[in-house]
Amino acid sequence: MPRNKRFWNRDRIGKVEIATHTDRLGRTAHAVACTSPGCNWSADYLNPAAAELAAQTHRCDPR
Image (cartoon, rainbow, N blue to C red; front, side, top):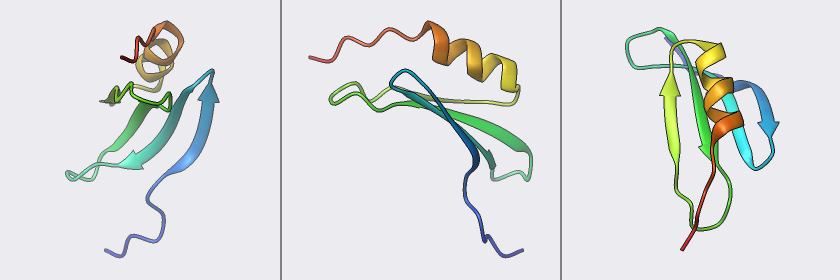
């Protein structure tokens, strides 16, 4: 199966980006990543509500 699009439905909440993608098992997953320099926080969720909640409650403390 060709991969034409890696991420779609990209959104941003503050400095955290949310994007939808297909994981290695073929399921639709939601990636969440902080774009703040030095934070390096990211996570994958199968539920879009969980991804949005994680983005809203993330507090980064880059050192």
